[in-house]
Image 1 (cartoon, one colour):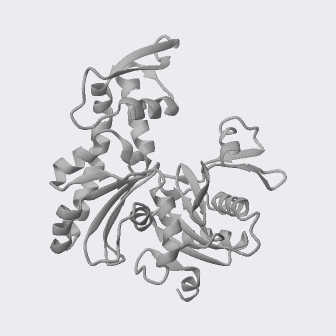
Image 2 (spheres, rainbow, N blue to C red):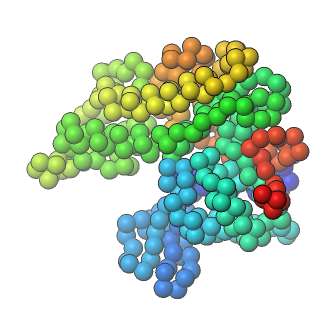
Image 3 (cartoon, rainbow, N blue to C red):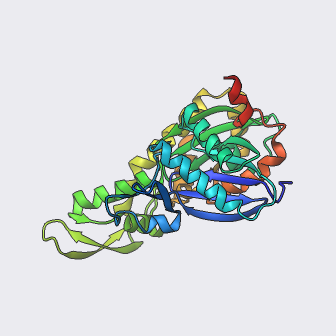
Length: 339
């Protein structure tokens, strides 16, 4: 059982999710606002998100993680520090912290995140890989020598891994996830219908009627944007087929990544996947028909986790119980002193 003082941080491209003990206490956008004149953080999370695109020159409002990598080293350190202080404000003792980072970040960036957590008052810091945390959060037993496959689709990256006996055997990361799906929708309607829509509209319609496997013409929705020819507001009724044209190429990139991991894995573990199936986690995995598309092309059963959005965060709380047994994807900060 995780202690009530243990903190888990899912440091994602789109959101930062924090658990305290086994309770989820923070779920806010990965955005920070910084006053360059005073050299201080003004806001993080929801408050900083409201400032995006609306600040004067001396105030910087940014998303320091993009496409699964740290694009602004200093701002990421400050973001981690602020959220750790926010989560540990009422704690009497220094907490242990597990941080789940995008798999594409470098060892140097790993150290930066760890240092930020230590400076914010952590007693001990661990780094865990997203696929391990996702499986733990979904309630999968990873201690047996039996292959389990997870596809974690977040905002910036898709992480695919086969896990057996507490360790990652085969893995791959792809910069194709929720944000890229939204971008494909925006480009499609701009090119085909000369209609410019925002990212928020694209995300909403994707959630509402998006389907990448056998779309239905009868399922429709109305989107609103700006006509690029007339420069006037326009409403357009679209069907699942319209969205399918935009989303299918992106979905097939995810399928290709999954197949690539299966091709490099030992045949015994690939055989296990036919029995245990492929588990989809993360917000991007909720795209309609994606599970069926992956199952169709891999010939293995595929299902969406019961709580895909919070799987990784829930896994962080459970990871404290596995600190002594996890072989891969779980490292103590002290190890970095000897590298």
